[in-house]
Length: 147
Image (cartoon, rainbow, N blue to C red; front, side, top):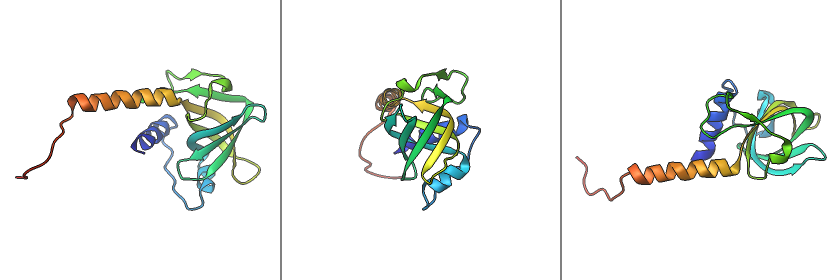
């Protein structure tokens, strides 16, 4: 879960710091901010729709058009300088996305102008590297006394 929050913070920095929104109304709060963040759970390239599980809980249908930009961003990136343009075919289930755009015509939908993508494999590789670094430099043990 901590990794998800780190990714959200990174993506927010990439998008000129949009304030985090948490609401019991779920997707309504996301749509009002002009962004949707979550994990891809299904992709329908023919219908030009992506279903994501948002960080706030509910599922959201993200619709894209021919002109929608898909940009792959490396984990830990603080800007879009090294973002690579990718086709929708490179998007996979399990990838994390931040879609920027506006609310769709029906509730629970979102029309994306730009979709920032962090691949599941890149995130797993980054997490493994961080974990190895913690194991290498971290200290483990049992506290026997406090002074």
